[in-house]
Image: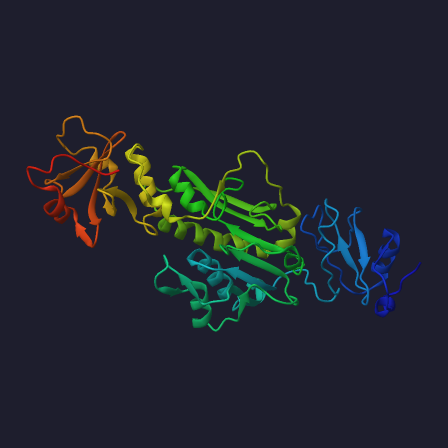
Length: 412
């Protein structure tokens, strides 16, 4: 069977797979550009002068579109078909951005700024943003807070698309995802000729999941980084890595401070990937299953202090989740919150004279005006307590701990 360029308008009642040599003949005779796509590319060429030998060309029913598939899995690429004149071979790209929180803002801002670029420096042509359908996010079941992504789009007149997306997605080249928090279905991933690139703040495969920055601090990691990877359906953070860079975690980092560093780094990295997207996809590497660690969402129950832990572990807990959930403990059946934790290095130098302290034992140190609690390897100090209302450590001592008949007091 010989196909000519003019044959692209014929009708077909069924989807057919044509032999490679037939489709190669069609490509060579046609002046239409053809672009390869698959979530698991094994070979890509930007000029299309050299066609990878392992390709299949499919012509969909109703519209004969030359569609190149490469890859290892049999069914990964059967969902999407692209008109040959719709797929771009290089920047500027038509981008759909997926984001939800403050970590996403840096990358969105970088992409938005680039839309105003000129000539060779312009990587983004069109930018539309997918964010949660409601413009509000909940904070511990209390006041609704406007989503930072929605607010940025509102302030900068960016088009927003509510999630979940209903209907077909057409006219985009690539998706960019950053801290989105939702699994993107396979048919939507396949809507993008170049797939969807995810900006993930960890050195994958370490810390796959929802809270990699928090868990890096919780576990005392010395090094972290950012991975730009292609997302896959049904599972989070398992796709091939396009670009990965590491950095040392600064001493006494909090989740918020480290998030800012990694967000800025991720924004820079995604622009570098978009500058040469086909090459990064071609050279992407699969993740190893060695060293895989998982992290779930941060929940309130994580804030309950275990006084059998070391002062360093309790300090890491405070730095990891204290901005979101104040540390909690129990005192005479009442839940109390402890905040303004002292640096354990400072606490170790305090001269607190208590004979044979037990785990959770509470002592007020007048010299430092800190509420001190004994843990596995020493004292930890807090400057603020919330029982029925927020109060200083000194006020808590005066109201609840002082007096000769009170005896020793313990948090559990």
